[in-house]
Structure formats: C-alpha cells, structure tokens
Length: 166
Image (tube, rainbow, N blue to C red):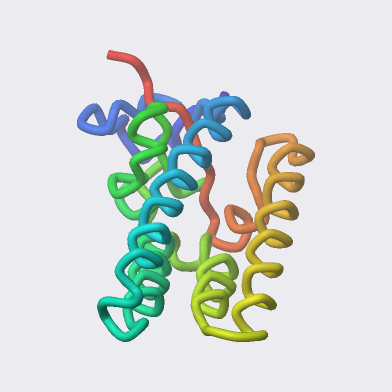
C-alpha cells in the first residue's frame, strides 16, 4: 500500500485514502465484465449488419474502440467492470483519477488493434490476433509487476487500485 503524496489530500468523493493495489482476481472480474459488454455489442452489430448494408459492424467497432479508449477516464467511471468490482484507475504519482489522455495512453494499443479488427477481410483477422496478443502481454505484465501495473499503466503513469470501503 502506498500513501498519497503529502501535498494531496484524500479524495473522499472517490473513496481514495491510500493507493491499495487492486487484487488480481478483482481485475480479472472487471475485465471479464467488460468482455461480456464487448461481446453483446459485437453480437448486436452482427445481427443488425444485414439491415444496415453491413455498416453496423464497422460502427460497432468504432463505438467499441471509443468505449475502450475512454473507459478509465475519471478513475474508470465509464467502466462497468471497474464499477462492479470497486476498482479505479488513478495517476500513479498523485492518486488523482486518470485523465482522458492517460486513459487513451493506457489503452491505445488495444484500441488500435480493435479498430483494425473491425475492418473486413484479412486486416480484420490481423487485428483480432493483435487484440489477443496485446491482451495476453498486458495480463502477464500485470501479474509479474510487483505493483500489479500492466504495460499500459507504465506508459500512462497510472495504476489500478481498490476503492476504499466506506
């Protein structure tokens, strides 16, 4: 557990009193929840595709990419998985909720791969393989890092913590 810096008071609105690393099981639960949301979006796009001259899958890819890019803004306010499991993404140095730029930096590689996966044909398959590869690398990096930070966390200067219980 890392205490907040001296110059920053705890943010009671967000339930942050110390930077307690998120347990691996809670992180897996949050990711699983978000994969279910992603699956529902993709299923809806597949079912609606013929009705929209196959524009729905591309639109779903763009919406999914936007969701994934900004899901960690304001500590994960837009992330159903993090809300459900009581986790949040914060700036590693200050403990403040993640900014939009940090969220984009943290999830950028995965978003780029998801957008590529939305393209029909061989580029879509390449993108899908990239999504799986990036997800595996990120999961392994979070497991081996002493602070539980994945590569995206190091790039963005963030970390995932458990919200303090009130």
